[in-house]
Length: 442
Image (tube, rainbow, N blue to C red; front, side, top):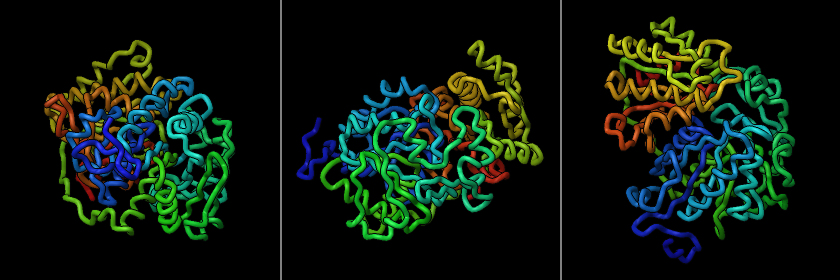
């Protein structure tokens, strides 16, 4: 390990001090966090696994990096074996802030993808007196008020806002249905730690006057001024030690806003237009009604549909060769293709097996050079699909839809490296989402 600097933070020789490292509980959410820190002007890379010191030395100008994990879809009992060593590796890189990135709708339970378990692991490694948990992400239509989370149907400015336990999609999530909107109660089922609250009234104070004695403290967020103050408050907490936090990409937005205001980073105002990429391949393991609406719209716009036998794939752990051959044949004909699992089939299927199968279809299409841009939809399956595609890391190249940037693949597989990929969570985007990705709309 390299010696610590006088501030107590470790620098890798020849590298800038890393301001932020985040660990995402799935791939779609990780690219969401990547987007917001890149928009703030940070040089950042998203890795599949916690990077080694040697890997980081290949990126001497990094301000931030992320790790796209898969803990959102695994049993809580297995999370310690993944998170404890991952957090230790991240800690050794000396990042000033370490963020465990979760879905903005806090998808989790005491048994699957437990955010409480992640909090406990972070407390073990980083030993912070207080662990902040940011509840809202206004830019994505997620609002936390007096501890209760509200979410827009879809993301951004469109769609009706619902209390989380009454949300038409999240209250019916097939794995972790939201039955409690008070995040203190929701997380209290997953950790024994006392959970306090810094509410919107407390956020009227100056950052230096905000405090909490709780081991875990939930922060409300209703608007972007709240996030700016939270960013300042988080940086105050990180002056003497690495600050571990939990929450959505609101953490990246909050820190980025404060670093912009304090001129540590310069925000990016313009991005190069990515252009049209035809044919486009979409592989979807999402069972969200938002994604279903997007698939229906794309079919009307001329996309070809291929339905894979998800039940067979998950029972015998093989790729649906019939579906894969049909996908490749259509792509050869320059047809835009969506391959998905059909309606109402995925409730009890393995995210790992399904994700690997969809990833293999995507990888084969890319290796055959039928496509240069691929969209992967579905938070639970995305992490497994990315690994099946031989992706080592990604870099953001352009914003398309807020929370789901276009990225470039870094891979030892030369036929995959340079591929454009977009990872979309189930709730993300308007009905013309796939058409926008085809045309590279910014």
